Image 1 (cartoon, rainbow, N blue to C red):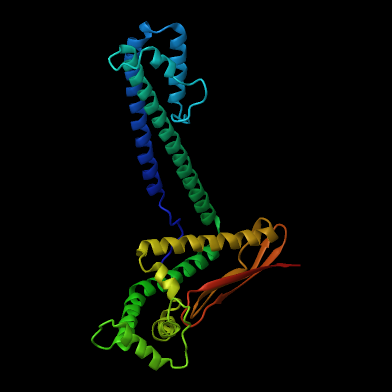
Image 2 (cartoon, one colour):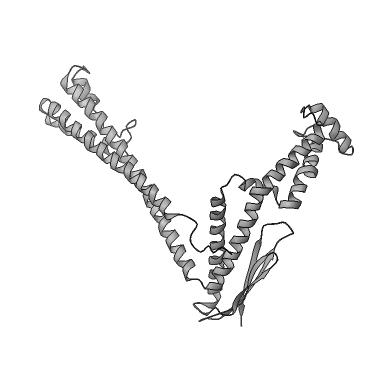
Length: 331
């Protein structure tokens, strides 16, 4: 039996995403520095040519535009350079107009970059929280007793086996069923002629009268059930579930099952300790294996009391294992 006890989420992948976002931040910071230097050059042009009052207004507007939350299209009242531009006749050749217009554009660019940095920083914080949660969960998994780890690994292995069988064997089986059903409807020629299919469906299901208001022939629904869906489900279980994982990689399937297995055990642990308090004796808990999988049963003793664990698996002949675990207080 394979042993899976570590988190399915790869921390190094998240750290790589953090590094990528940090590189974006560094690039934006360098861009801001470049634009600040450009504004300094523009200031050297317009500052000697404007009044102190105009300079104060220019600085006020440029500072606003540098902000990450600035709105360049709907600026607050009093944050406009229109009057100053008008004073210099909106002439492109005028040195004040040219320098100030460029400085305004640079300040807007700084504000956009600052907003991008703010958003990237928030994403990095989210990634770091994910890493922290993964590590915390890993520590919780490491602290659980061996019997729970053994049970978790058995369940995960059963899920993996079931899912990989559906992926590697169920999908071609479905394709074969679909092909056979097509031949039944349209004949060996595979013409796809709707009238041919309609006649065949009427022959197969003479007692079904399709609704004239329906978007689909009820006979075709019944045909699909009889010749595709039910045969598939007799061999591999839910067709809907099978379709949901067919395009997943083997690694992703295992990662999903690993996470589900860990959550199953941590939930069980939480329900047990809610009754027992800190556990002092796990030795009464044991794993029982059968033809269809493993269950865990027994008594757990804690500082505040005792709990009985009773688990069963709900499964048909061909169905994904579903564990139902009961935890009861013992008086």
